[in-house]
Image (cartoon, rainbow, N blue to C red; front, top):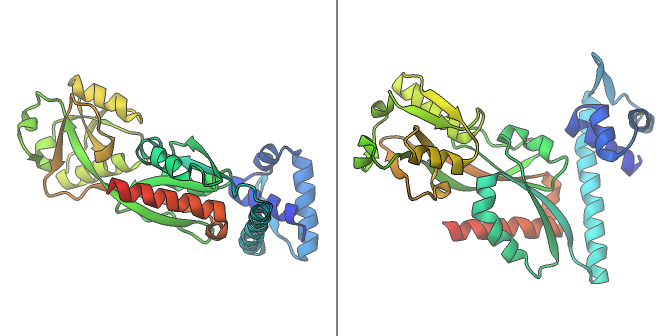
Length: 296
């Protein structure tokens, strides 16, 4: 089977449509469809089947995608080994990071990689952990986050490594009556106006847990994913919020723990299972682990 056609099949599994694959690989949709048909003939079995106006993978197609992951990873490892023999850098690694995680860890990661021969290309991607499989179509490593009670991002095609646990605290305006306490009970928050993030992110998941515990639906007045803006709004007494502990930098807010509540988000480092054996990717993973150890 042709390696490039296996790559096209994997892209379809990651991106979902022929049009999306064509755009990513700078091909025409008809060329993508033709290559997939040829791959089906090479495999000797139908890899795709109609699903309305779209195509979906058959059981055989999904099985071949797993093997395509292994083949393409082996090709990348071979390239890295040849580069090492030539004395050239290990190579480029593409990483996606959620913004607050990038602020906490990326500077130390880049410092660690200085002089290593690994070229890390980092971009911020503010999406829920459920989007990890889609991100791995474009990135080698994805730093994501989830509520500590949510399932991890692992699957047959994704390896997710829990890096650290970050507590989530209550932040209040400094003049708020509850700011006089060291910790705050859930029932004391029933009448508050909340500033939260968009649904699907760990902070909002914790707020929903608070609602379940108190039996009162929180009154969310603003939904903003930029933690700096949330801090400014809380400092100006426009509401209260929950924020991850290491993200709070504004001296104009009061930070308090929630009494009797175990609330946190988990940092996860996700990649394809075979990529751990690629030297450049392995070096980047180790740099993240080292950065987390310093935070702890």
